Structure formats: structure tokens, C-alpha cells
Length: 354
Image (cartoon, rainbow, N blue to C red):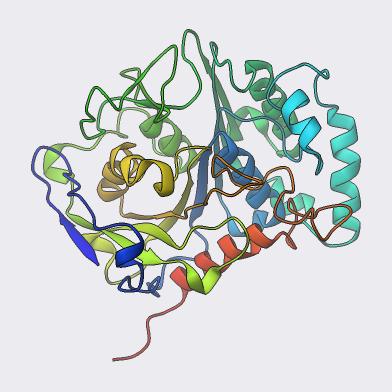
């Protein structure tokens, strides 16, 4: 089902029907004829790790990568112990970027990731909170160093921002729809929703960088803000271990006829619909930016399980470790990577003739 979004006082995203009772009535992910050469991905925490996995696996499919509160590509190398002790806290020491580079070279030899030439063209934005106690700030710096070694001109393609006194999560600011105080996390301490009340327009900053929008023009006026729809869709066509039964899609009014760009937005642990409902997809501020700049936003949803109680994206191999000695979650063969790319394929296909 769809819910209209009106351009009054910004975009107002009305409450959506969710839950098991509505799952069998949800529409399929539509074919919209989106531009295949204009796609970006942004993710926070586990979604940030997954965003980098997507960009490295398929760099020819993405022009921009934004990572919030996460560390280097393939940091965990398929091991939960390393994920917890090296990729979130420094208990086991910092990740070895040279070791990860050897892993990447092996993947390239077996054509499990994209070419270095394609990866070198990426635009990248990395942000980390200086007071992050969930994923150590040094890990964001390590990711920036890793990306700088891959990009052709890092001084013009990479932006790294570390915000002092900001905790772990997705900073909220100007342009985002209001969120009840009980659901808005403290900027320094974080909170249950991981949406941080920082009065910082990080979404606008990141998206403007990814899509090379000149400074001073990234904020749209109210008159430029367009209506759109937030679609709650059935994810069963893309069912793999760790994916929820339904996802969300924001389609600006101007994109109904196709031709728009696509941004894939990946929530972090404990931020999916199963635990937070539609709080993240309604209130993160990305829909407002996308409506003003004619971009469709895909919000895939992960689910909780015994192996993954917080509904994280698979950045350490849990979805494949039961049947692979060396999980390939961080390659083109990764089950969640393939599912997310299949969603992109669907959106970029031309609609069936009427």
C-alpha cells in the first residue's frame, strides 16, 4: 500500500500499515526504469559495513558510497570474534589494512568483486562520531585510509568527517521531519532509535558530496520540495537468510515516470522495522532530500534471528557460516549482496507496457 506525502511544512510521512497481518497485502517492488548509471548507497553501523561491501563487489553499479559509524571493508573477515574485538572495539588491536588488501586481491583473482579501475572512480563520504562507544572512531579513520588507497584522486573523491561529542548513530538535523523526544537519541550518548538529536544536516552534507552538488545549493527551498509516496513492499521475491518479509521505498512524484537516480539506504543494527517500525525510514531526513533532488530511495530491511538478535546486516558472515567454511558474504556471491543487487535490478528495469 502507499501513503501520500504532502509538501506542507516539509514532507509529512503519515503512519504506514505494518506487521504480519498486512504482509500478504503488500505490493511487489515495482519496476521504475531508474537510471542505471546513477546509483549511490548510504549506510549506518552494520548498514555502513554492508554499503561498502556492495560498492566493492559492484563498483561499476555505484557512483557514490556514504558510510556512517563503521570501519574498513571486510574488517571481520568472516569471524564474529574479530567483528566484536577488532571492528567495533580495539580489544584485539586495529584491523590490518595490508591483510585486507590481500583478501581483496584474492577476490579479484576469482572475479568475486569489481575491478580496481571501476572502484577508483567512486565518490565516497565517511562520517564518524568522535564520542562513538559502539564502533571506535579510529575505525572510521581506517576506512577513510583504505578508501584513499583505492580512489584515483582521493583529495577530490573522498571526504572524511569526524564530529566531536557525537555518539553512535545517524545524526538528525535541518530538513528532517520532527521526531518525538522520547524517540530521539541524545547526540552524545545515542539512544534506542540511534537517530541522534544533533542539529546537524549530515544527510544533506553526505548526499551533496556523493552527487557533486556545489556548496550553498544543497538545501532546497520549501517551494522546491516535491510530493512523493512511501511504499511498503513485499521482500519475499528476494528472500535470503537475514532479510525481513517487507521493505520500504520512497518515490518522489517526479520519479513516477522513471529516469531518476537511486539511493540504497541501509539501516543499522536495532534500527530495522521489526524493532523500530517505520521510525528510521520516516524520520532520517533522506526522503526530504531525495524529493527535492529527484532520487528514489530504497530501504531494504533486515530481520532478527538467534544468530542475529539485533537485525544487523551481514558484515561478518552469519548468513553463510553454517554452510561455508570461509563465508563469501563480502563478495558478489554473498547471499545478502545478491538480494540487494536484485532489488536494484528490479527498480532499474523498465515498467511493463500497459
